[in-house]
Length: 123
Image 1 (cartoon, rainbow, N blue to C red):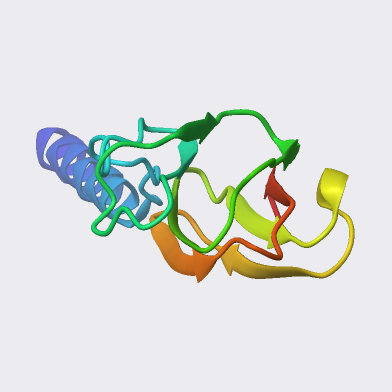
Image 2: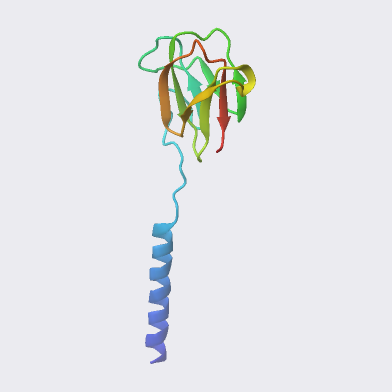
């Protein structure tokens, strides 16, 4: 009887472990570079490059990244992971009106004429 009880306990523990493993949240990570934008980065592509192929600027760190000379339509892709977002702001240093909030694995084809900074952050 003792052996059967032990077997049942081991079986129950194995099932519980399998259930916990199956329900545990997966780590959100990009599978591979997206349009040559490396994992963990936000990439801005040259004016008019559609589809996005080779970024002209790559942003890695959280905070505001000021832009110069970016006009008309560009792709911007958020290839970050772990819930990190990016947004576009009309002023330098992440000031002014901010819009186009991009969750990981999202991007925008948008007019950069009014955009003067890109902000990377975790909401």
